[in-house]
Length: 86
Image 1 (cartoon, rainbow, N blue to C red):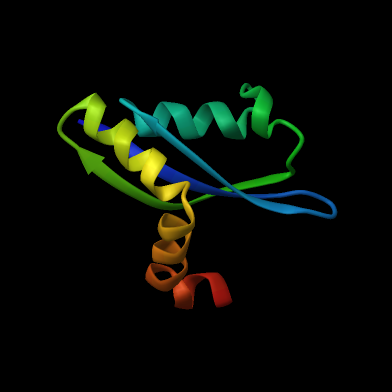
Image 2 (image 1 turned 120 degrees about the vertical axis):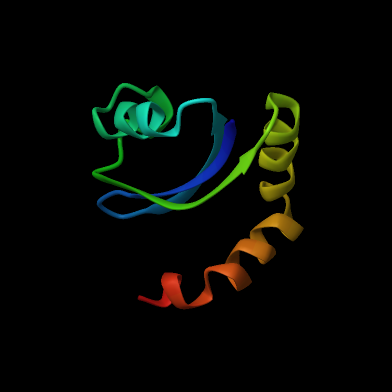
């Protein structure tokens, strides 16, 4: 299985959604939390807020690209409406 995921990254004065895909979700999240990933290293808090599974790598990558678009962000906002409010 391959996973498309969204992280909510929080820093001192900023907040960012980070999108990615991987074949090992637990390992990848651990790498983020141990500050092993350059793009998210500067954030103090990293939280997995959404993920989907796909049977192949190509579909997972395509879904990551879709979620990064305005439509995809709108989908996530509606999908996670109650979660983001809290």
